[in-house]
Image 1 (spheres, rainbow, N blue to C red):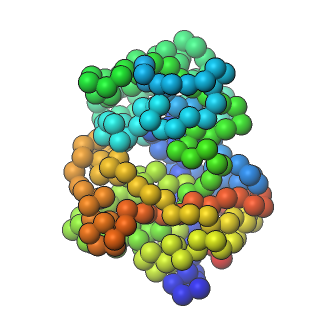
Image 2 (image 1 turned 180 degrees about the vertical axis):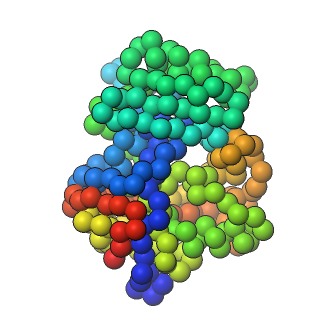
Image 3 (image 1 turned 180 degrees about the horizontal axis):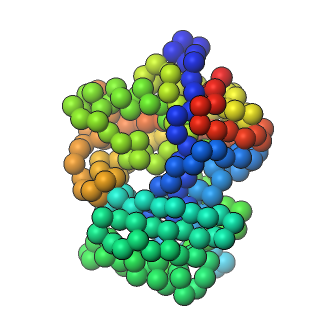
Length: 253
């Protein structure tokens, strides 16, 4: 397909706690019918959340999220999936390590996040995990794929470089023409030794306007997308249809 030849992975990113940190990884094992590994394993529900008992997947409005607090976008993390451990850092908070499945650590995590969440919103209340279900914005197990060239094109339109971490993607690909990834809807692609089916564009929200270094809203990404491209999509969602290992610099075919 025009503009899609020569694609290679340039970054792989996971977000163990929904809206609370991003982490670069060198490789990942994608599993058929599953989301990106160790991505959105936990989420932090606010005091007004309407959740079932036992908790199942719930829409993003029930959780702390970057749309509601730009400060959250400046959290970065390091994790140890084998130990269920996540270390969070932020310009305004001390670096701290948590095991979110431990009740005492979950309480400490909620307290750590509290100063980064607006006082006029329902306060952070509890850590949630749904075994076997990633707490992504979609109830389906999808992986997000984003293009470096599209990011560069949007950056040029805005007159400033944009960090990829504004978009909380899993797989970043270099070598495609700008916005060519949107032509992949309905197509199957090979990534490393895995195979995926591209299903839909990713509709974005104002959280992408927050700077992941400062936690401040500093650019109108939504306005720029609408003004220059006639939509507010960035990147695509794909479903893993054949398991396989992927790594930075792998070809995307």
